[in-house]
Length: 171
Image 1 (tube, rainbow, N blue to C red):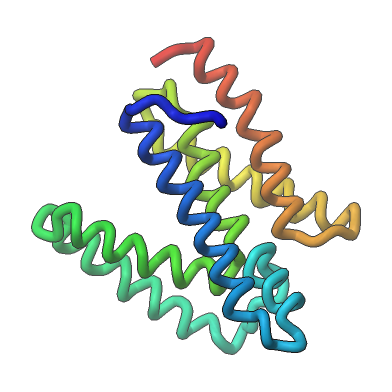
Image 2: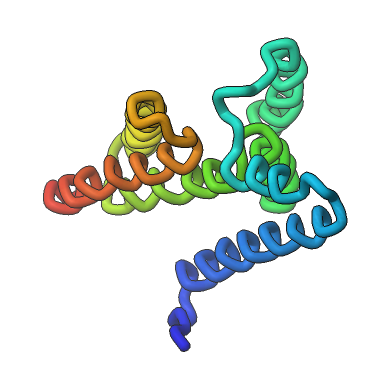
């Protein structure tokens, strides 16, 4: 069995992997007695990014504002516990909106792609994510495949050469 070395990265990766497994298996348990449980599980994991109800967008914007406002106004006073509480709310809300795979990929892949970047890292990570989403949606439309899984694969395909370039360029 593969074990991560006792490091900050290993602990973080193990926590993320465990969260994924707990979320996926918890969803299976919650939907076990539902006759349409398989379809609901697919929606929760892969998401329905193209079918988000436009009438609910103002409510989604309000929830995002309620999460971002404390972070922007009281970032220093919230500390780690406040950050993680807001982060948990944002992740829970996002998973319900676009699915677990897209949320997990959006959190991990841009950060890994820009791991060796020290200047303007955040803007480069946003660029990797935006390219992954835009090209993924285009590929999904062109190939007539589900958008969530295609975006996940395309974001990784975008991130790999970016990571190689960023590593070669250095900090």
